[in-house]
Image 1 (cartoon, rainbow, N blue to C red):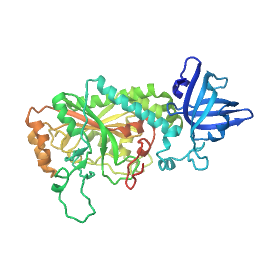
Image 2 (cartoon, helix red, strand yellow; image 1 turned 90 degrees about the vertical axis):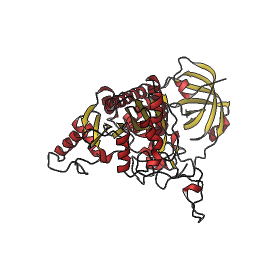
Image 3 (cartoon, helix red, strand yellow; image 1 turned 30 degrees about the horizontal axis):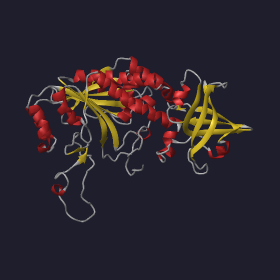
Image 4 (cartoon, helix red, strand yellow; image 1 turned 135 degrees about the horizontal axis):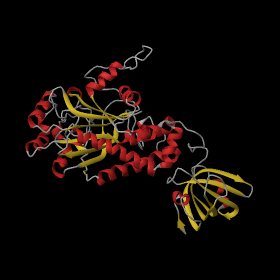
Length: 463
C-alpha cells in the first residue's frame, strides 16, 4: 500500500485505492454503524476526514482512538460528498499505534491560552496555531537560504564558542568545564581553552573574516544573550541572520535589507498561504495590510536626526496629551513606541533610520565625518518596530583602534579583527536580523516565546 501524507491526500488530483494515512486523532464522532475521524499528521493545517464503518477491520479499536492518539488507517481516497472538503478516506482498517489517555491528555477540542501552551511546549505544535507557526518557520528558513544563494552569497558557519564580545556589552553566557561549586579558586587559565569563553552573541565578526576573502557571505545560526529581560521581545537563545558584503557602503546595506525583507515575505505568502491566513483571520486582522506595505511600498529613508525632530514635533496628541511614554531627545536609542509611530502613523510604510549617534552604537561601526554619528541603519516595520540593524563597518585601522580604546575593550582579544584592517582592508557592510522577529512580523504573534520551539528565558529552561 502507498502511504500518503495528509497534505498529499488533500492535494490529490484523483481518487486513489489502497492507501495508508498515519497521524494523530484531532476529533472523533461516532454514529450508529459508522464513525468519523479527523486526522492530522502535521503536514497541513487542514485535517483529513476518515470514515470507518462498523465491521471494518479494527472497528473494535475505535474506543482507543481518542483525541491525541496516533493511528494508522488503510483504505481508499474518495471524493467527499461533504461541503468544504474535496477528499476523504473510506477506511478498510484502523490500527491504534499509540494511545492518549483522554483524562490526562491536555489538548482537548477547545481554545487554549498561549500561557498554558507555553507550559506544554512539547505538545503545542500539535495545535492548529503552533503547527502553522512552525511550518512557517521551516519555510522561512528555506526562503532565507534561497535568497542569499540566488544573490551570490556564500553560507558561513560561524562559531558558537567565542572569546570575543561582538557587541561590547558584556551580557554573555560563560562556558566552562570547571565546577563552580567545588570551592576551589580556579582561574581562566585552568579552564578548557585557557581563557574566558562564552556563547556567541553574534556571527558578525566571523562573517567579516569571510567577507574579506570570499566577498558576499552570510551566517544563519543560534546566538545567545544573557539579558535578564522578561519581555515579549527578548529570549536568551534565538537565531540570527547576518549577511556581510565586501566593497559595500551603507547604501548597499540598506538596499540589501529592503530587498531581502520583500523577498522573504513574498515567498512565505506564496508557499504558506493556508497557514498565513490563519493568523490574518484570528491573530491580527491588519496583518495582510501590514505585509502589503512591506512588499509593495518603497521603504522611507530618514536620518536619525530628522527622525528625532519628527518625533519631538509629534510628542503631543491633538488633545495635548503625551503621545510617548519615553521622552525623545537627540542621543537616545529609539524605543518601540517611537519606531511604530514613524512606520504606522507618520510615514505609513517601512522606514530605514540611519546615521545614529556613535555613543549608542557598537565599536565596529564606521565613524561619519561629523565625529558624532556612525554609518548605522535600522529597518523599522509597522507593528513590530526594528527588525534589522546594520552598518558600514569601520575599515580604518586607526579609527577602529581609537574606538576600542574609548570603550575600554580589551585590545588583545581583537588582534585578528585588526589584521583584517592591517592586510588589504576594504569598505564592507552588513546587518543582523533576529529570525524570530521576522516570524513575529509575518504572523502577527506578539510574543517571541511563541515563534521558537523551546523558549529560553530567565528562570526557564524546560524541554
